[in-house]
Amino acid sequence: MKTVKVNASKNYDVIIGEGVRALLPEKIKELFKNGKVMIVTDSKVSSLHLEKIKMLLDENKIENDAFVFPEGEKSKSPETLFELLESLAEKRFTKSDVLLALGGGVTGDLTGLAAAMFLRGVHIIQMPTTLLSAVDSSVGGKTAVNLKAGKNLAGVFNQPELVLCDTSLLETLEDDVFADGMAEVIKYGVLADKELFDKVKSGNVKESIEEIIARCVEIKRDIVAEDEFDKGKRQLLNFGHTLGHAIEAESNFEISHGTAVAMGMVLAAEISYKNKLTEINLTEEIEEACRNNSLKTACPYELEKLASFAGSDKKISGKTISFIVPEKLGECVGVKMDLSEFSRMLEMN
Ligand code: GLY
Image (cartoon, rainbow, N blue to C red):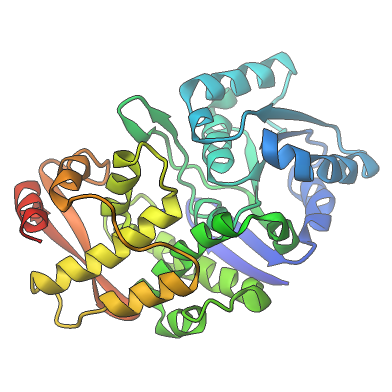
């Protein structure tokens, strides 16, 4: 078991290890006294894990209820958010109660936003069930729902009180969902830790998954401690994401987030080198690491097509974009450029 301590506007522990869900009752009693728990989860995770979590709470006489919504990105919507808020109100949840986000990124982001809004703030525990949410979305306090115009357009920063990452919950993941999370792990290696990159590039990761998740969380923790509200350094976490989000959108979300990020990282490395933003060409190394981790890397779209999507990304400020460039393994920098310059760069490739 490993504990990573996050110091942000709220200080909290991220506890990672096999079976750490068993700590849930004692942590709830320690942090929230007699608070009752609303478990928020989707239809798929509910069929796999809800019963055992409910049983754990029941056995420890912790009052609980569950809000289950349909699996998938479509549920990351204002409609589901308000259904959850209405359910909390109807069941008379109060400020001393707690929401438990049991699931992947959709569940974590939706529940985090509901926790910030309900009664202007109730407690939240994140319990990730995907590798992607374990290494990224459950930590750092970004919450959101999607709007018609795009992904994650309505949200707030809301740090959890605790993250309990039980690695045994990842054992039921399908291979492609596990691979999705590996795209984010590879991203952490490229942007902050060559040793991590070298460790995961062969694709043999399952044996040391606890250590790998803990290292990714430490990297994210350090970045969030410096720039919780995404004004500067935190944007490094977007390596591969500006083009990745454009690929997801162009595919009408048929291409998964992790695959799109893998394609986005390879393209970012190639474009950076060709446009002399970096002296070292990391394209092949990143491509190989992605391939060995069952991630497709060939982008099926013309780059100029992606330019218009990239222009509506929420990471843009005014008409300027911060394009994340890999300088060497373990180090990335943000290069600010006009959107028109960015589009021109894509069109030339
Ligand atoms: N997922 C990127 C961030 O938390 O900033």
